[in-house]
Length: 263
Image 1 (cartoon, one colour):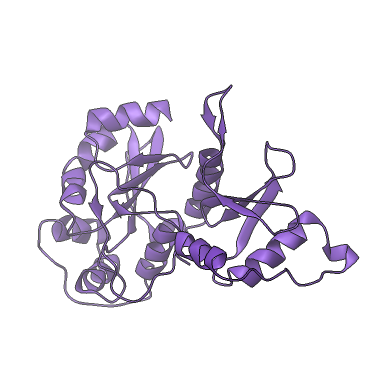
Image 2 (cartoon, rainbow, N blue to C red):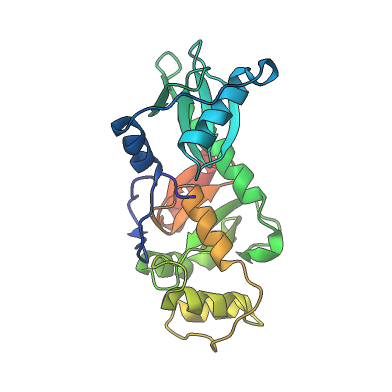
């Protein structure tokens, strides 16, 4: 599943598709509204509740997506629907869909982003701890999740600061995100990193152009890559807090400390 990616943040390098048509949410919406709209299949009385109708509409019109949580939005008659870590709004009959952010002007709050943050952290917390390459102090005060690429210059710059991040009380949990895609040379090198006997040393060396011996094993690299696309990673490093807040790309240790304190 490919969701509409977030815009590229400062301190990030964009990821590059490895070919093939990637039909994101925006493309799917354009296709839907440029073509004839078909009514949602008739549902029984038990299936006519808004959630059931919305799920049926998503399944029928966007078969490559699966609706996550569905709940009433702050606007009466409009439902917030999670597609991965992206938010859309739909009418209770599943006929109308809106893509865009919902703001509370009184509270000056982006309500859609709150939904994304919750979806992101649920997705990140679903990753088994043994799949991360984690650099952490003994008693971390904060944890950040970082989608990384071994060839990305900003990722290398971030990793040079890893000891200072740890000294500031921040644990860093790395996930693999080879920007050139699954099956690429970078992907294979990152598989070798995750399969190395000492993954911490292998990752550090790989970011210094000292690649590990080519090897393979049961590894999470492709899962991390797909998870990154699901949560909207558009470049690396892509950094998220424990609350699911997208910090952005590279920050200096001082800036990172302020960011996690304020999240």
